[in-house]
Amino acid sequence: MYAIVNIAGQQFKVKDGQQIYVHRLKDEAGKKVEFSDVVLAENDGKVKIGSPIKGAIVTATVVEHLRDDKVLVFKKKRRKGYKKMNGHRQYLTKIQIDSIKI
Image (cartoon, rainbow, N blue to C red; front, side, top):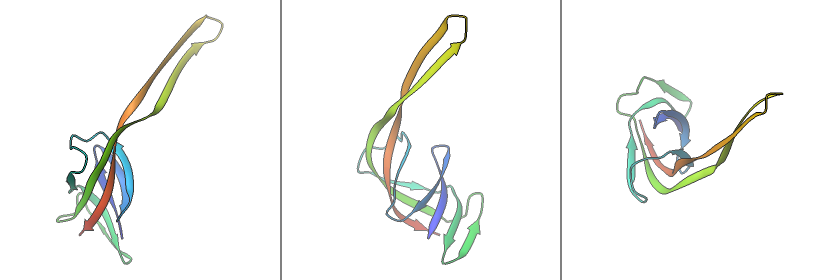
């Protein structure tokens, strides 16, 4: 059984017990979170598609908040002497999928 769910503006394919990284959520670590924006759900070969599917809920637990590796942004124009280096670290939340209810 798996589902495709919208979490913080992105779509993720999730299964029971899976841990995924999503954009930073406001909930504290250890809290339960419910996502009701389920776009697709599969159970024993039967696929349900909706936008969103009525009554489908994915529950998850927030494991921790962390930051991703540094992403470097380097701009250069050849023969002009223009170089610019920039970078950032994305804020992430690690969640564990507890159950998928259709």
